Image (cartoon, rainbow, N blue to C red; front, side, top):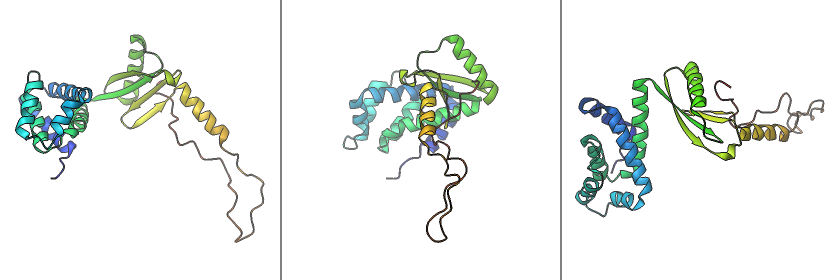
Length: 213
């Protein structure tokens, strides 16, 4: 059986949603389905079990989720059940949301802080990101005391690490990097490689400060 591409499914789903209802409704429903399947492993295993007839699994979806899902989202789940690819619903949801954000000029920023940010801080950060990135910025907060302080901001695949933990890590990497071997004589031809010159390589971890810092 050929695997269905989450991107293709998400684009088709968005096209159908535009015709039949508010596309945001489908985005919200997909997010809710993803959370439910993650929190109820038995339901996820049941829907993904190819040994159970597809009709029975569709009935399970109708009984468990039918009361709050639109026909568009139910249709996607029916298709994934028929193709035994319910495990891809999270990937479809991610691509769908990204496509919808692009349509609406929305930029999502995942912000990690050691403590929960105040509303004033969130608005200041949103304004700074909007100035740099353009569009309407949506802040998604998460708290991780392990970063000690500062912020880690992720926008798409780009990470701005301005956390105290990140700064300490970069400092440690710089201290552990051996200095260039200036002044050492070059080995005779054919006896080895030339000594390293210039500056040591930069640390490989993310090192940019968060926008607005």
